[in-house]
Image (cartoon, rainbow over all chains, first blue to last red; front, top):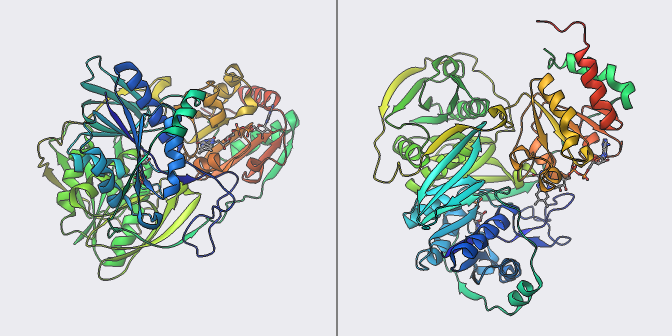
Length: 254
Length: 321
Ligand SMILES: Cc1cc2nc3c(=O)[nH]c(=O)nc-3n(C[C@H](O)[C@H](O)[C@H](O)COP(=O)(O)OP(=O)(O)OC[C@H]3O[C@@H](n4cnc5c(N)ncnc54)[C@H](O)[C@@H]3O)c2cc1C
Ligand SMILES: Nc1ncnc2c1ncn2[C@@H]1O[C@H](COP(=O)(O)O)[C@@H](O)[C@H]1O
């Protein structure tokens, strides 16, 4: 089973997000880069499928030349090949153009499955996977937190929870799935994995497509922190009577 | 020309996230001098819709249950000639609008918190990035705006004057393949209570210490008619399933009360609970960021405070009803 996984290089966010002086990007002078936990899980899921069925896991990213770093960490986790779609100047192309660029790799690789994150950690557009599926003409399910592939490798049962209900989607392969953290616990890279990743050759493909007619970002800002004035009700069990009164006041006691 | 809003109905009622979407959609319609129409798959819930100023209700038949691409196909047909198509920023809302975007070739702006519509098809929007830790201001120049509305920003407000909510039956016109992917629904475990829509969430973090440590929190949650939510430490330790995780990579909650116990308040956690109306934090560390984000704080050991609180609630003389 050959699986393609799409990952995106994003800043590592620790204690706070700060915006650069021009107000148009996240200040990354103090941060490293990573991929989102959803995408890490997508890589892990793909590697498990390749271990079970045989076949190759290819990771692809559209981004700046430096995104090679994220591809190598995926290779260390067990992916076998990596493609870097190099965007001009590392520009954000927007979800439609991103899907089109990913399609160029997904369409002629003979893949049985394409995995993405449900949403990118940074832009959170919630759509690249679905746009890619439409370009491929393949079925798609999103937000998946449990996946079962039948022994023949011809169909998948993909599950997510929605409003207290488990939704199960049956999809014929090939298909596109966007996954979420929780679908598995990703492994740590092994030493041989890391060595292999270091040596691996990454195919680089220049992308010419211009940002395509979507949103024109004018500014980024950190929302005013809803810092509330915490009233300290007390210390330890002595606070319980005050706590009960507050619960009553908030109307949550029946 | 109309502003359409996809409305999700659960148990005969319009879900809260859709009421927020309707509130934003009504504002956009007012700016454009246009009508507001709801699109419903299943029961029309016309009473709720009238209260939110809906003029026309398009009740779609011919699709059994949830089929994302089929829902998208129906909305794409309605979008032709509309000002905007709006949906809640739920799993379903974002998914269906992305299908509409893919079918029509239009851009889609996810998780908007504010939209103002200028003349000539130009929309100024503010939307969430980084799960709401960052806001993006953007301009969208399009014939039809496809927008989803963040589930944890803004409030649901009924209209000053109710709409007429005239129900029109719409027969879905689908193409091959639209029904290949559809949800088979089954109640989830634990009574199927929903974290995303719970009115009370009792949160537990590393401070709870173990899977067994959650006993008193479960008890408190059931006394308050709520559910338990947890931090990522708790799910990666395997104390609780990931479906209960609150935060950037978990669920966004919008309860009336979030009672955060033994949770430090990392920004990735705050991203999931910033939409709570009220927050009470219980923490041994008075300087924990969660305490600064709370309306009320108790400094202390949750293993003492929660059992004492449960006991006090059980012994309350005035438990009405
Ligand atoms: C990309 C990314 C995504 C993430 N997504 C999420 C997410 O979705 N959700 C999420 O929660 N986190 C997420 N995180 C993790 C987040 O950064 C924090 O690590 C996590 O939220 C910390 O969990 P915690 O508060 O339970 O633990 P800690 O930070 O260790 O805090 C434990 C708290 O409990 C208090 N405490 C200890 N003992 C007691 C006691 N007996 N009584 C009372 N208080 C006590 C301590 O004082 C402390 O404040 C993410 C991180 C990354 C990098
Ligand atoms: N530049 C990119 N390169 C590779 N994959 C991407 C890129 N942008 C988005 N994706 C994939 O699409 C998913 C959804 O992204 P989005 O629709 O932008 O929120 C992400 O989790 C990634 O798996």
